[in-house]
Image 1 (cartoon, rainbow, N blue to C red):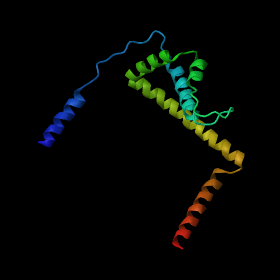
Image 2: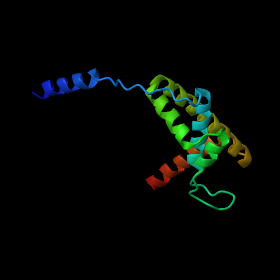
Image 3: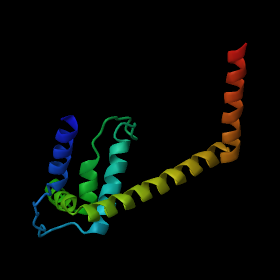
Length: 140
C-alpha cells in the first residue's frame, strides 16, 4: 500500500506544472545588468558584518548597490520575480555571478598570500606538517 501511495504522490507531483506566466516588466533589468547587480549584492551581504572604515558593523549596504545601478528595490524585485519564472535565464545569471565570485575569491587569496609573503605551496606544506605534528602528539 505504501508503494502505491508513493507512486501516486510522485505521479501527481511530477505531472503538475506551473502555468503562471509573469508579464515582462516595462523597466526590466537586463540579464547582464542583473548579473552585476546580484554580484554586488552578494559582496554587500558578505561584508555587512565586517568593520568598515568608521568601525561600524552590521551595516546594510544594499541601498548603495541600488544607488550604484540607478534602480530601486521595487524594480529589482519585479525583475527578480520575472527571471525566477524563466528558470533557464535565472540559472545562467547565477552561474555567471558564481563564476565572478570565485574569480574574486582566488584574486583575494593570491593578494593575501603575496602580502604575507607565503606561496600557496608553502602554505599547503605547512598545513601538512601541522597535521603530522598533531597526529604525533596524539600518539604520545
